[in-house]
Image (cartoon, rainbow, N blue to C red):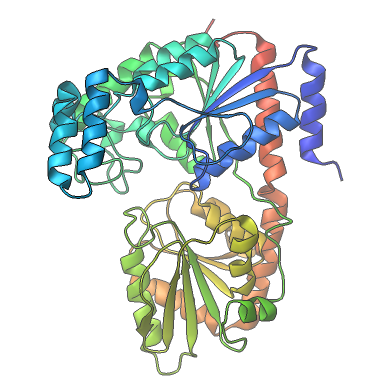
Length: 464
């Protein structure tokens, strides 16, 4: 079998004798799935012979070629002084610290109070300067308090621009996902939930929407990659549509060697779980507080399962959050935070009999891909791109339930816990899905081939 990454390397190496240069832009070098994808692609580009740099708003590690975008140090001296004073005040007087920091940047503070999205990050000018020495700028999440979106048009004229969307923020008046709201199709305004991340203080969502429209309209052309057909369909119904040069679905992937089917007994013993009791796993950073996940529905469903006297004792591990253990009848819920590294995380999938993923909105969650690759059946809310991951009918790697429905989630979970043979069948199909569609090498090969195609075309924006 040909390694898809090898195929991309051969195609890339033959396209030009000159070393091609890619500059990626991302929120951070450590974090959730979007940040991890950018870091892995940074290595994939370099492995394929590209000169690869990754600029991040928040740099925590020391990976080669990863550069920090200047933050507060790039602000006006008055603003820098205010931030420094506020930092010293914050432990003892947090409210006063907020006032001092705001007073040192009055225009920015007024805009925030008006509900305008905060683009005041002068340090991101360094990204535009770095793009002058790049053939391709490959940007990921541009929210996260580090990037001035107004620079996007200038950036698109410095080098060919490819945007990988991990959420819908570029298409809305403030939120990363609108959940059930469709106002992003017509211009936002009258926002039903200003608290959704990234939150705003007042409803200036219509003005924010129009500002993004102007930014995209002045660009030299935009290429968009989306991990799911669901998200790409939204792109093609959004303000971005008329500015697209090209748009493609490139599924995210995972390492199929790290996440692979393994016997559960030893893994459960390593985690201190009974070998003869089922373990249900949920994964999500800040699971209880994340508005896009659906912890209330999950807990309600677990209470229903735990109140059933016929249900076996069950352990639920929720990875990525910190909270005291819960006892819900026959169900014990353990919260585990601070697990770092794929090898450590994969141990929890090895111990799991079912992976549950309750969500209000989601693009293409890595946790579902890791479960499929580990051969663990998935029980998930039918939202966003998740149905594309889990599959349907005889090819399904698990079951889908309506979002926000504790009874349906409880019924689905109880059914899987009571059917070991069914779990094994779903698990085997889950692994087949991962092998055929969600190998990270396939994802990297698709990006490398497209990047080579973009550079070979020789145009910057692509409209000419």
